[in-house]
Structures are given as structure tokens and as C-alpha cells.
Length: 258
Image (tube, rainbow, N blue to C red; front, top):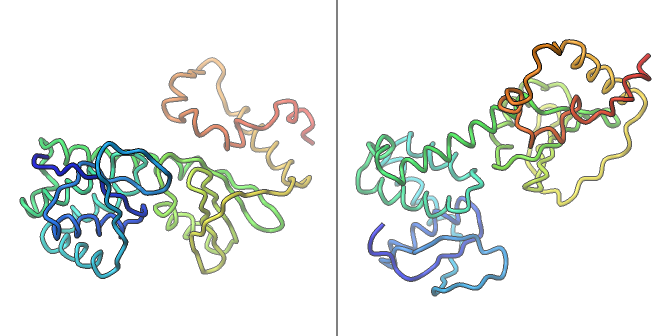
């Protein structure tokens, strides 16, 4: 985007904070060269400006997005914000500016680099969410189901509806190690909270037995003659294996199955 100012915006990393960056840039009539999260000491080549989150400013920008660009653009912005891409803040900012110029058609301007990047970010977030819906493995601790995941993107809010509906009568927690947050649910209340470090107790004998049962089932239905490691990693990327029961249970434990 042309006419950028030699200034970097720093904000708190929240969605409202990013919308405030948009608000302030229009008020100050400047287009930042970059927008970064102010979470650690950094050395910059350009002047920096700290943008303080303000709910009223954020609400005004959000309302204008719906009015001028429509629901499709709102969806791209909200889901794109969950992406782990370092450049996401500037991409979303540029997309919003395009939306103010082109209106409702902005979401379909796929020939534009910024719009294409937005769609790619959303696709990446949605793909990871889809995979994790099938790769979450729960273990029981004192009557509560607990699962641990390590996603690249912040997909926990997108997984909330699925698991709350599927386990509506249970108590469960899904801990996101990457972002240090957990989805905590008890009938019929759910919330996402920050947890810096999760320490789980040792599994009891019943839980260990269920793990061995699941692992044996997984290995029993496998067809050795049709094993294709490359294909499996395509459908089940290796980065998810750490917390998959069937991939982590000690093979020797299967021999102890009764």
C-alpha cells in the first residue's frame, strides 16, 4: 500500500486493539508501515506509536465494517485474526482500508494480494480447526475429561460449540498449550480462561487400561499391507501426534492388556 508513514503501531494484541489501530490511523491521517503486538522489548528502525485499546473506538470501526463491507468481510476479519501469521495485523488493517474504498465487493477481489492473503489465513485457520475436531483425545481425571492440544492458530473459540454440544452432560477441559488458555465446560456453562501451566495428576489404572484398549483397537484395524506413512502424515500431520493416545502409548503396554 502506497503512502505509508515511517511509523510502527504497537497494540495489546486484542481484536479491539487492532480496530483501534484502524481508528487512530484515520484520525491521524497516517498509514503505518507495520502493526505489531507490544509484548516484548524490541528495537525498531522506525518511530513507534503505542495504540491504547478503547471500546468506543473499536465499536465504531466494527459497526462501520458491517455497514460498508458486509457479513462476508466481517467473517474474514474475525477468523483471520485467529491466525498465527506474524503479518496478520497489517494484512487485516490493509483489508479494512480496501473495504472502505470498494465496499461489499472487497471479499471477492481475489486478484488483490491483500484479499488473497486474507482468504489464505482464514483457510489455514479453518483447516486446523477441522483437523483438531478429530484429533482431540480426552483422558479422565477425577471425573473430568481433559485434553491437551498444540495448535498453530488460536482455534479454541471455533471448537467450543462442537465440544459443548457433543459433551453437554459432561465436565471437560481442552488446554491449548500454544496460547496458554483452556476451554472449561460444566453443564451448561463454558468459558475460555488463561492458564500459564497445566500440571495433570498421574493416570489411574482404569484410565491406563482404556488407553491400552484404544491403542490396541487402532493397531488391530490397521492393514499392514496398505500402510502408507506419507499418506497418513498428509491426513494426520506429525505435529498433532504428540497428544494422540494411539501415537504415544508405549507399545509394550499393549502386552499387559487384560
